[in-house]
Length: 452
Image 1 (cartoon, rainbow, N blue to C red):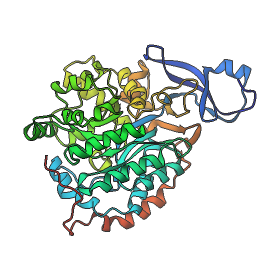
Image 2 (cartoon, rainbow, N blue to C red; image 1 turned 90 degrees about the vertical axis):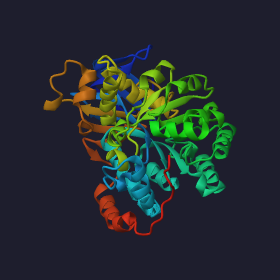
Image 3 (cartoon, rainbow, N blue to C red; image 1 turned 60 degrees about the vertical axis):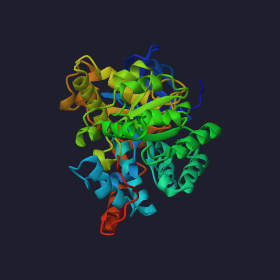
Image 4 (cartoon, helix red, strand yellow; image 1 turned 60 degrees about the horizontal axis):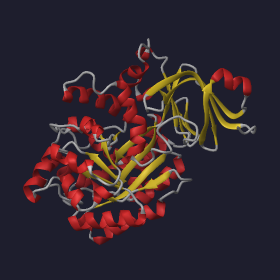
């Protein structure tokens, strides 16, 4: 261990740790030593106090729990600008009558302000990494670099854009991979099998393998899409991806509530690393009959990460809420109060979410050698006392507003609820000035048609 001062020392907290079987445990009265953006050690606070090390920054975290930073595995961050704009509508009208007409107005400035607001919301809610699938992603990458969060970014494309959509997605992924001191990773980002042709999906699969890039897309989002795909092609959306070669890539599938039994054997024999992101609040809101089949996917060893989708459908970027809803909806859907437990929900929110975005070796747990993406959660409030079962308290009683401190790569981005890298009032003022032009739908254009 080095004798020079550590960058950061966190003492007095209870730490969520994973044992060698990946079961979750809690280490009380612990100290976390951070150096050069990584966790150097996790030990007893008394032992660290006795032996050093000195640190440039010290956080006394008594009464708090240290968790790995949460990961939002699928979102459209700049869509916070459309929060609450398209309400109480079925999916088809939501896309065709509101969202896709409004998105045809988007400028880079709108995307920038939306991304700033989104990053502020996520940092305040303990999200340290997000997987984003949107337009003008150069702008989002700049915001990520500046505000200090971690992100997995993909420039979305539809086949209606012609070959340049796919080329732009590749060019973005190659140019930004590993930027922002390694905090940005990238993916190819075709929108979905119903908006991207088989030829473009196959080309994407070839490019992914050739350049060592993962792929992030929407597929089998709901049962209607699966039924429509079967009627049109005789194949489910998952089988369409398989035929295109995408299951040989590292693939992140958003939603998957339309995954059916015949898809499971296809997913099981996938030669790439497949993962699914679940964003349960939107499924409830759109009145979809099914949710992500987490139990069946877990039985195949497929990680299921937690997500919010965009705030236009979810109304927030609160992964804390996704964690609680995932547990509750799985119990209801499976008719089994023993599934999904609070400990399982925490596993999905941490290690499984890290794996889903391809970062399972560097984030997702608090352990020596991992990147120091850490959040401190205050459990002293009346709504979190007393604590009989710490996992249940975290999942079902704590709220995102209980996150006091958010740290990414060893850098404190929020301390005692104060954001240190973003100026929210200025962002909100600028964004609100731009809203009338952004939400105007009188032009009758839309960037795409939803007809599944």
